[in-house]
Length: 406
Image 1 (cartoon, helix red, strand yellow):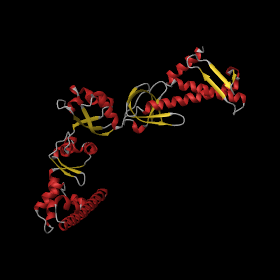
Image 2 (image 1 turned 90 degrees about the vertical axis):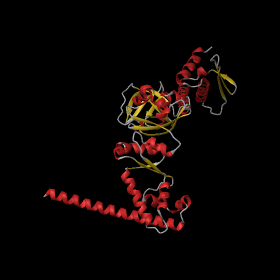
Image 3 (image 1 turned 90 degrees about the horizontal axis):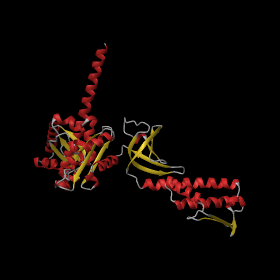
Image 4 (image 1 turned 30 degrees about the vertical axis):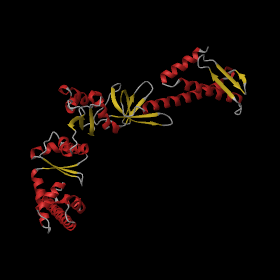
């Protein structure tokens, strides 16, 4: 019995996660290549068999037995190269097959090094993952030998290696972290319905519960914030807002803009726009730092969100009402209908056009055309007025600058 050969095959199969049968086939093909090299006869019928239970090798050339051990040094080198190539190919196939099934999962690895900004992470003894700079959290650096958790974003097979692309910025990384920290999510009691993220800064998550007894927001936060704290710590302090999902777009938009308190919401389905009214003291909170809160809320809900103060909202309604009054056949009821449609300014009316006014509000087509034409004219007037004001302010600033220079 050739126990040594069986032991070598067993070790390679275990260490490189390759099927033993594939290794036996590789060995047989390598020996066939070596025999062809030795006999310099590509047309001869050479057969090599390795007994899978004993490890004994039998070989024949045109049905005549040959001793594979007597082939010489050069054919042996040929066999060695063929074996190395085939085992490497099998190893690549094994790695690809394993990790392509794990796409979208979270995996832990050890930081090895940085290469031109790309973070190299050792996932096991033989496999390395690559985290491009764009998939790393802004401002977060990792030390060599540090354990790091990341999402398997993609798996690509090349001629020389399998590239496993990792990410810590993808929204699905947050989803998977929540599934790990909140058992109710993995048990399908709570569901993440929507998620919007600006990696490294802030994330908004909308959750719902299929069990009336389970509070989705409270379950995600955890006792004294324990669950959400673990996720925030993993993300290096990234802020996470957990809001309650609602099928009503008005309620959802209001929830998404938290922690700001909303006074009123007007939805325009024709434009996909939500006009939100907040008190003056809530304005900066609703918009957020560099517009982050309203931007994430818009992505979370799928609505284009405009935030106005009550004064701005009333001014818009007043201009709209005055514009409508200039059209013969239109009255106050038309203004109410337009507001119900979500048009709260002349710009909205200009964008919506005449067709929805006829179909949705039942307004006469002739009057609808006149309303839109009047709105377009008013928008142009306001734009010209704004331009003149800007030019005047620019001239005054220039004059002040010149005066200071003298």
